[in-house]
Length: 187
Ligand code: 5GP
Image (cartoon, rainbow, N blue to C red):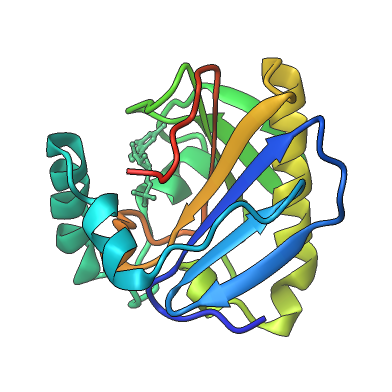
């Protein structure tokens, strides 16, 4: 699966739908669903929608500020969280993955799932065949988080990729969101 530098991956899960995972690439946005392919927005329309609120503008500003170190491989705040040099509210941890609550939650449940070893994965757009195993581990860990948080019947997994998708921390991370009715299209 090809990935461009400014894509966003959304994963929505509904327990009533049991079809096999699918993925589709359209322009620079990638949508996955463990249940069904929900909808693919034309890039120009979704770009307007993604950063259209005040909160989103803050996120956009953070993303632009982070852009200067985006691909340098410089350490991020997540390295300190992994090393437990700064505190985080850990929800799940195993040998390869760490999941902790987002400091600025966008839903009652908002957990970040990250690889402990970044190994070049500053963003999903940097994924290479050697990362396939850890990418699967991250998705599986997201499901475990959803289960632990009691949102398995309806949750969303988001990966912001690149400045245009409002990525602000360049250490691959999956946002696991739930505990409220999600809207579509995402904003
Ligand atoms: P992005 O915007 O790159 O997709 O997501 C980065 C996320 O990291 C944001 O939702 C932001 O709130 C979160 N974040 C940034 N710094 C910290 C931190 O120090 N601790 C925690 N728990 N989350 C953080």
